[in-house]
Length: 181
Image: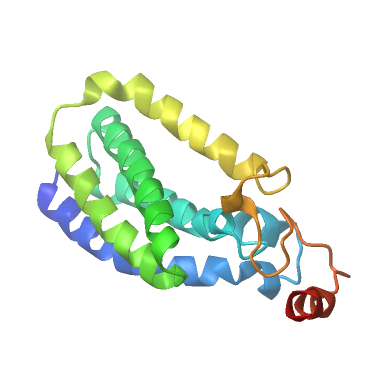
């Protein structure tokens, strides 16, 4: 394994993923609310929908690292799956205290990449099945919770009070007026 290249890629990962988070956060509106925007972008302003681009960019960048740095596959899957769960937990915790998506994403991604780098140096290949299970669970949630979100606060859009995909003809002005009066 080329640890120098891998370390450099981990350092660059947070910055490149941050650009991807910004793009994917706006993808739903940029694609005029089509299916690509629904799957890969944020369909509302909820904490969960702002977490989706963070998860996707981390995972996609991990694929780029796998092809470029040629790490040991089992150890890499374990390190990246635990790193992804760490990023998700850190992001959710940060969003409880701050509203900025980009700042929260950077403050979650940078330690997440560092965490996965540290795990990569350890011999964790025995946890390969657990890592695969974690990745499967995360992506089942990723694809299910946009269309069918649970009635939890992290899935509620703060502007409309709705969950999931907001209807195109929804009157946001009425929500604003009912909040004011």
